[in-house]
Figure 1 (cartoon, rainbow, N blue to C red):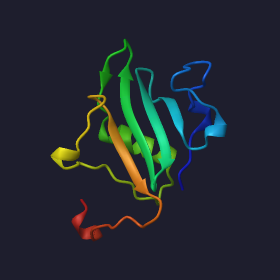
Figure 2 (figure 1 turned 135 degrees about the horizontal axis):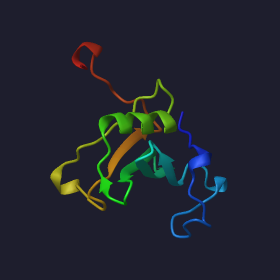
Figure 3 (figure 1 turned 135 degrees about the vertical axis):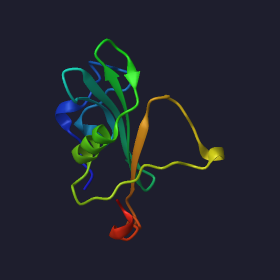
Figure 4 (figure 1 turned 120 degrees about the vertical axis):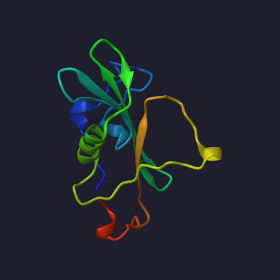
Length: 123
């Protein structure tokens, strides 16, 4: 089940460009403190048959970096249930768009079950 951590939502008062309130549902920008040194910034949307969370990390001092696997697992757990399967795509070169160099994306279709390989193949 797709859900948003309302306590982490960026408000319009804080950032008029990307801010929102709970009336936006599962859409908006979120600031999630991961540790004393790192913050995850997420843009979240559900529409057009997909749930989507894009994430980049900002370190203390303002340096951006790409999220680690462990950080993406934490983000996945905040926005989806433990039993939900979500995807991180590596698109075909002609479909690739890079708006922010340190952003990774999680996706889940809303109208179908995600196909999965046999457990023995997943290490």
